[in-house]
Length: 77
Image (cartoon, rainbow, N blue to C red; front, side, top):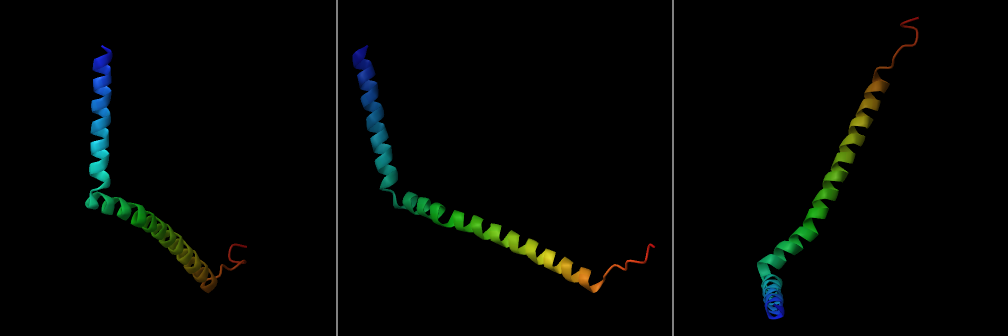
């Protein structure tokens, strides 16, 4: 019983070491990980900034239009 558990543990550890070694030494995998870690946050921050810029632009445009067409105060009086 103990020998079987020990054998399973050794097999699991050796498979784990082999898979870890295969992924760490794989240049395509490392390139993919670096790309994801480097570019994805930049893309997300860029989109967030772009959305905020669009909102500010729309607000500024709406304020400019309000200035062009002021509401008269005595229209409903």
